[in-house]
Image 1 (cartoon, rainbow, N blue to C red):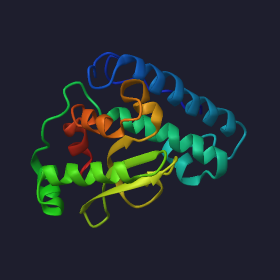
Image 2 (cartoon, one colour):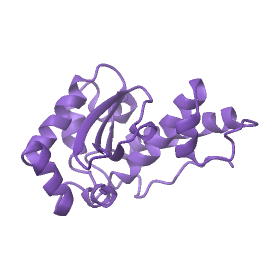
Image 3 (cartoon, rainbow, N blue to C red):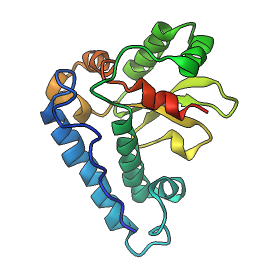
Length: 192
């Protein structure tokens, strides 16, 4: 069963001015598509061919893992963003963030700090651990929490293609813009 490139859940201009349409065209239309296409080429004739993408990521190794994980990470990323994003999380998510970080502001500081400290390409995630607590983790390259016991709640892509057209070498500016498009309702819906 071939993996398909998911459509963006919003119009390509919907995240402007925080993330421009040209960046989404490159990020989704080129990079994400390349990962999906490469995953399908590498899957052809393999024992993993009939699995769902998250299962492929859990079982794949080498080049297939790299491509499938990037396809999964990107598909997840689009579900974390919304033109109605930004603001503050509420409900149980806000309570869990306050319990772990003191308040949402301190969580954002920790998440941003972790993202800025990551050397090279990768991802920063808000995850829920098996014990129910929340945590911020960074992964290098294509690595993803979907291969472990943590539940991914929020992802931030730290590969240059995610921000270079908009921000050039300004990762901090990209992260500041990111907070304006985070879909807290989608993040909260993943909390267990």
